[in-house]
Image (cartoon, rainbow, N blue to C red; front, side, top):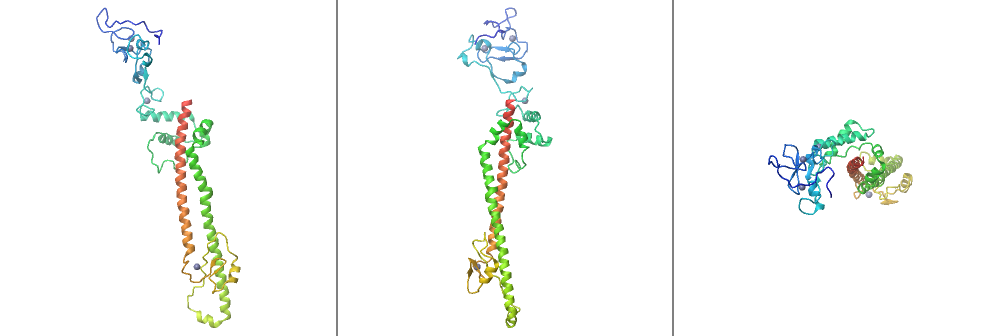
Length: 332
Ligand SMILES: [Zn+2]
Ligand SMILES: [Zn+2]
Ligand SMILES: [Zn+2]
Ligand SMILES: [Zn+2]
């Protein structure tokens, strides 16, 4: 690299011929307290002003090489490696402090300010000031409380997408993890939960059918008892159980009409059309209640799973949305 046009030719002079004081920089002047930077190649010092570097960059110099070292006139080591390296500047415009460690900002305050400015520039429709503040807070939080984060639906997605549809689709819509979660959620919503709900409904319908059967059997028995007064006397006062068990494994569909079953009913046969017709059946005691409870429990745990999936989807969307904001801001 040759010397820049504003740089005078090199001279090895280190002291003022007049005063004998040490001189520095390309200007060969004494130290007047003006801002200077040390060269990593030759150990000389250089004025920011002489190098045409604004003073405000003073905290951003990581490794500096003077024009003479860069031109290969002074210094040691490979010339191509003599490059001034700058620290990453805080992303907030007007701040010339270096970024703190892995952050993109010099401080938390500037990170917050940057996000606020960025959001103000985006002017996403339909989002209230409070929501913006919340978003800023969320963007800055590095560790989230999983229980509360993502519980609220994210800001108006179509409005956000309008900002940059193709970038939005690339980052948000085509995200594999999000697609996976949404697919799982879809299956749960459209298949698993409806199938359990339907089973519960079928069981309820079957129990209704069984009640009908038992009422009809009771009515039929009442008729026969009415015709035989001696038997009425005999059974009076006895709390005899008169309902059939009704245990049936295919209750998703009804076995026959109640009348069909009543017509075939006979205490000597244990089952009709697969329906257990025993009275005082111990084997299947409370079978319908137990089955209904099991289904209800299953439904509850599926709904809890559904809640969790929604939460994961929202959290993932928020992560992607932040990526989207970051990327769209970098582009602008
Ligand atoms: Zn100078
Ligand atoms: Zn140098
Ligand atoms: Zn800053
Ligand atoms: Zn039974």
